[in-house]
Image (cartoon, rainbow, N blue to C red; front, side):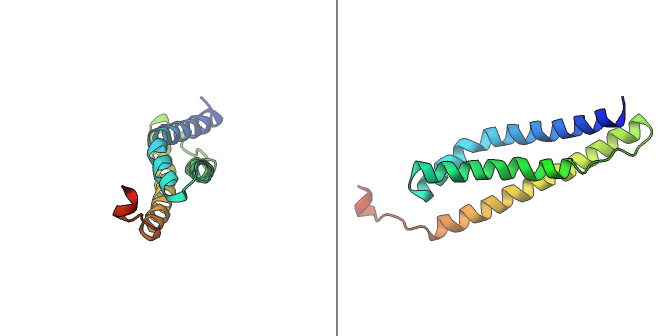
Length: 117
């Protein structure tokens, strides 16, 4: 295999892992955003925004990969090292979204117990 194939494998693995994690998290994030935003349309916007951020940041990091190893063993560990960086970018974006959602969950007005009944 040539370096372009290794590059494409690294990008594909990054996108696949990010998509699987987002598929798992999306329903939970959506419920929280509906509660915080108050309307379905606002929650939908922020859900899509979060999805783009969680896919886009690791994808941009993945595009910076340039295989340099000469042996297949070195190349394997080089790809694994870069995948760790890509997933680190995903986690950074996820933590950023979590901080913002947590902040707004704390400051959002909460209904009184009498109003909730």
